[in-house]
Image (cartoon, rainbow, N blue to C red; front, side, top):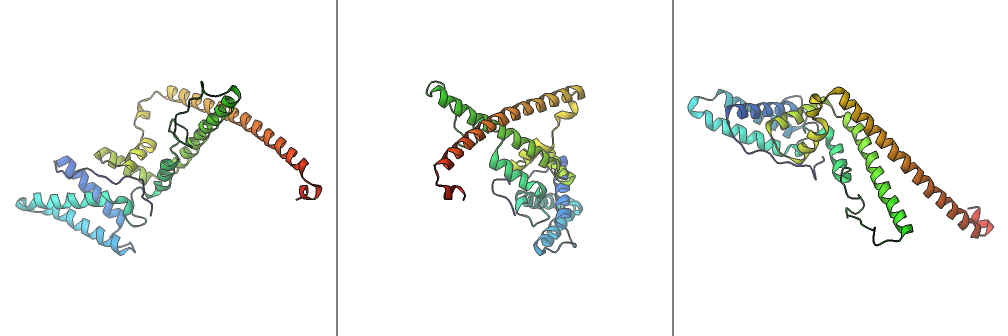
Length: 248
């Protein structure tokens, strides 16, 4: 089971009619995810039955008992949701995206500072020209590596199933909090695309891809220079070895 850095917070229970309906629908979705009878997980089945019982009680309670039944139902649903990343295998709402979330958290490819130390580097007035040139290459490698990471992550994000996307949309629509929700909302639930002019969107995408290609070309050129230097160094070292060691 994967959790760690992914958030598990939730909104506090409240029961205006619209929010109550949304929370009950969330509970029903959790019951369906946990499975009532088809699951082999005993704890999962118990949780599903418990939630289903509370939901039914909230829906069918008499007027004088309805508020208390609804409060118990809402509290239980939000408590299960708060521990969503601890649910059994196959029942976690964002399970299909957990690996992507872990990689994004670990790599943080959108960070503006270098990945290797997260320190702002300023050597304009402190380094010699030759040293500055090498350090500039280091930063370029870091920047291009991030570009590659973003591209590969976007490919992985495309594989996130519709069911997970539906969970993200539901949680976002309800205003539920959590780092996992916020991250997934950014990568799979982009509301601005529908409002963008299609031509403008395509132009932006073309420019973005062209920029990526240009950076990769610079990266390849720099990598070739590093390769040449290493090959020269290797040849020099091999020339210093005795013949029998060079063959090894």
